[in-house]
Length: 102
Image (cartoon, rainbow, N blue to C red):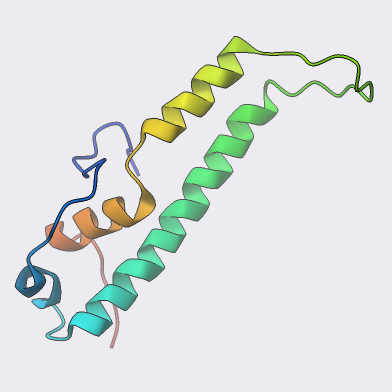
């Protein structure tokens, strides 16, 4: 999944219900499929973020020192600006990139 090239909306937008339900013919089934894909995307993003933040981890047992790492802050800000997993899933659904079985 390439998050940088995603055209998913960062803000909330309204989608056409007919376009969402067109592949399945049932809006509830379509939303369930999109929700499952959003959970998968969320898990992938979370794993990627944890791996990147682990690179900056310092293992100090001392509570006296609070160390700010600017690179770590920049990585966190980058992930905060990304489109939300549900927006990415809806974009994939509307583009026909999600396959499902009945």
